[in-house]
Length: 123
Image 1 (cartoon, rainbow, N blue to C red):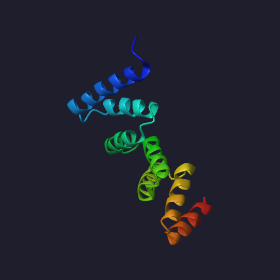
Image 2 (image 1 turned 60 degrees about the vertical axis):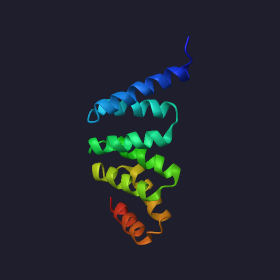
Image 3 (image 1 turned 120 degrees about the vertical axis):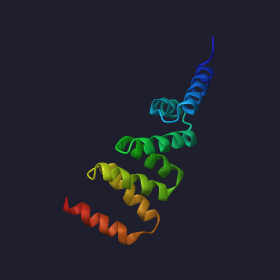
């Protein structure tokens, strides 16, 4: 009987082949994202979610996950990018607001932080 890791690797290989054969079909990417999330393969998960974000402009959860992963990796410019995109989808999303503020602070964009906090206080 194959081990769980062997089964996961086989599944991932099949999904990667499907992704190559049908690059504009997001179903392969969704399943790959699940597989990479289960195996904690964050570099590959970032790549797949980045491709998914390009295909689905209205998916807040993808942008939040990308911002979180980039925050974990210390890529503050990418955190800012995806948190901003998330706020374009839902301006009231508190997690995206916090991610954006933290990313701006880490990049010493103090004027933007002050402006953002001032705007958020009005809500």
